[in-house]
Amino acid sequence: MDHGKKAGGFLSGAGALLTCALLVIFTGTAPAQASAAGVNCGDTLTADAALTADLICSDIGLKIDTDGVTLDLGGHTFTGTGITVQAANVTVKNGKIVGTSENGVSVYRPGSDLRAGATLSDVRVVGKDRTTGRTRAQNATLTVNGTPNTCLIEGLTILASTATIEQCTVHGEVNIQDSPEATVSSSTLSNGRLVTDKSGGTYNGTVFDNFPVTVGADSGNDVFQDNLFRNSETALELKGGGPANRRTTFDGNVFMNNSIGLLSTGGFDLTTVKNNVFHGNKTVGFLINQSSAGVNPDPVADNIFFGNGASPRKITDLGGNTVRGGLHVFTGATPQPNLTLARNTGLANGGFLIWAKPGSVVDGGGNRGPCGPKPNPSLTCG
Image (cartoon, rainbow, N blue to C red; front, side, top):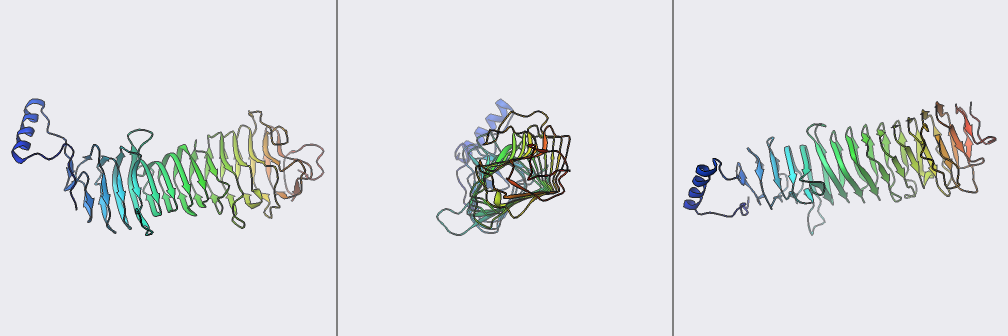
């Protein structure tokens, strides 16, 4: 490994001993170390390495530029400007990284078309404040895993990369751009937000707590399955309009205690919503609010709407109609029957189970709960 300059500069042998002795005599402490088991501040690691103590670097970090290297933090904390990975199949495991600059971990190869790649296993990547300590991957493969107690990410940027987040806790801003293969599973995302653009991802078995999600207009092939979305103003906004034949699917999720559970503002003809539960959302469980919509071959079906609309925000749709209740559909001033509703069930909603402008939906049968406005010959609810 190449040894960089230690914090505080190099001292001659005699001078270092004298300084250390004086510090111990007058302060009772030895100077802070800038190395741990041969790993020094500013090192470029070219072989496996491990920490045996905390490593504190005031204004420098570590670099890994050799494929296959493992850095074992050994349960200790590395503090510095960050760890930069410029190689493939790199593993950093078992410890904590405190970033003093914007990125606590960066995974990329500068000036190269080759992909970098790193696995962060049982690692907590945090910042000294809210503006530091992000994890960033560009043209790379990034895997982050562990347990919710040992895996923590505070801020995440994925650019043109493949990313897998599994059994991890995530806070702060998460941005996924130009990345069609992102996976988040069995994790907890809280106190932040997720924004995707020109991307597609799989989100499974994950809790989004005060963590609103925006699926960008150019995204597609997203699958949200068996997740919990709670405690947000709008839990998930689907802007739609992605490439043709790239559907977004919501299957088996729970939207609970938001103001709006699920909001579609465009491209709903490329969306499947089935088997979800919308419970206790203050304004509406599911709102489709867009100026126009193409024909959607998949019905909104087999969803349960319970106790939504109890304390609405007094919002209106694009046609000026009050929004409140379970499912509210507005798809243009001149409605076309472009969406089928089937076997949806509602109970104790503060409004209708379904509100849909007459002529805008197709009755697929089996909807149980009050529907409006009345009269609405295009929709019958039992």
